[in-house]
Length: 197
Image 1: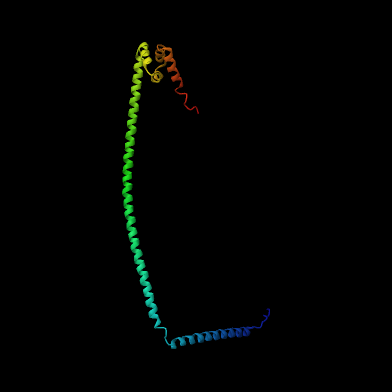
Image 2: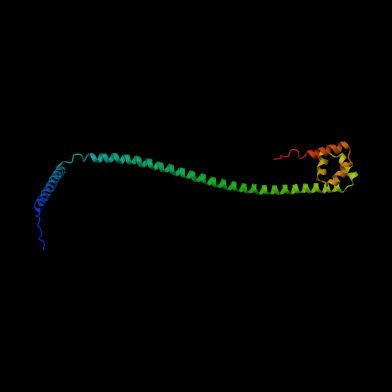
């Protein structure tokens, strides 16, 4: 067996250091308590000379609070009045919105009726022109030519443009050369101003 080598323990110098640190801490505590205790004893033994001043300061503070309280109450009244005005305006706006919605609904309905009436009128006018064109096509070319000779060239060109080409040619053949020419110019130029692109 191996012999264990013993190292000397140096615990004594460590204990001494710890004891010294503990003593310093205790001394510090005693000094602090002593200094604070002196101040506490001085406060207890001091005569109360400024006690009489406190009520006057409190009275002044109470007066200040009364002014602040009064100002807050006035502001609250103003806010309540303003809130009532806003509620009144909101109600007026709500009523106005309802009236506007009713008027818009009435305008929409009137517009729909107007569109329907215009569609009926357009259809009726188109039906009338179609019937009259059919009547002119059914006439004898000689009789239709005499009638077209008396019409305004633009008016007669409108009917001739709607007719079948064979019927329109028969009527144009019965017109004077000047009238047939003016109607032909109108027919040829009526789509000349249409955009090409």
